[in-house]
Amino acid sequence: MNMPSTFHTDPVVDSLMSAERQRCGYVIILPGIEGYSWLNRRIRTGLVQAEVPYAIEIYDWTRRLPRAIYNLRSRRLHRRQSRIVQEKILAYQQRWPQRPVFLIGHSGGGAMALRILEDLPEKTSISGAVLLGAAISPYFDFRKALQHVDRKIWNMTSLADVIFLGMLTLTAGTLDGRHTVSAGMVGFRPPMLSIHEIAKFEEMPYRTEYWRYGHLAGHFGFTAPRFVKNYIAPLLMQAEVRCPEIEMNDAIAPEALPNPASS
Image (tube, rainbow, N blue to C red; front, side, top):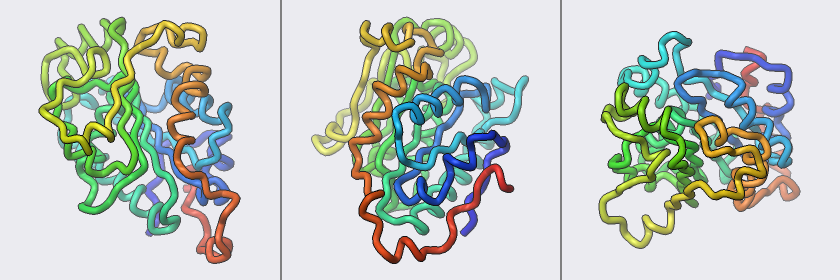
């Protein structure tokens, strides 16, 4: 099965999607409604600086500006792009079973990460998802998404993100169609969770120490490379990294999944 490719190429994509990295794990970065930009590239930079050994891909699920509101509210776009990312995940897991797989979503991408998770086939799961200022309603029921993570969903929030996750989503709406402040600002207000579900979900509100790492509490601070390096990468690296323990059948496995840059 071929892995659907992103719409953009970049000089570093080849090395970050190498077979050596793919056999360690896979991280998909989902941009906000602005699409492929300096913001998601900063997330990637932070992961590289932290020496995360996994394959790292920025997948642009959006239609290009000036269609930002369309990206935020189009259910048809969300369904179509969710299926594409699911295909990526399933293709990777078929080629490299039992490897860590993570989604990292900023703003609208954080909301998309939940949509992708809840749409995964039954008995399919990934390691986890990191939501960075997710543009989704605090009342969104993420329990179905929790069924498709082995470790955890981390929701990073900031009460100071009042422009994008407060005023903007109050007027334009969240990705799930509610006119409210976002869960990326105030956290989720979920229904009653079971003990098992509680263990798989963690709210991570803004801490003043983040200032030292370039996260100044605003919407763009979630993507600061030093913040990503010191606070997001360690979440991913808690998963088992099997790179030094590659079995012989991995060494003779079919060639690596297609590179976005090569398509």
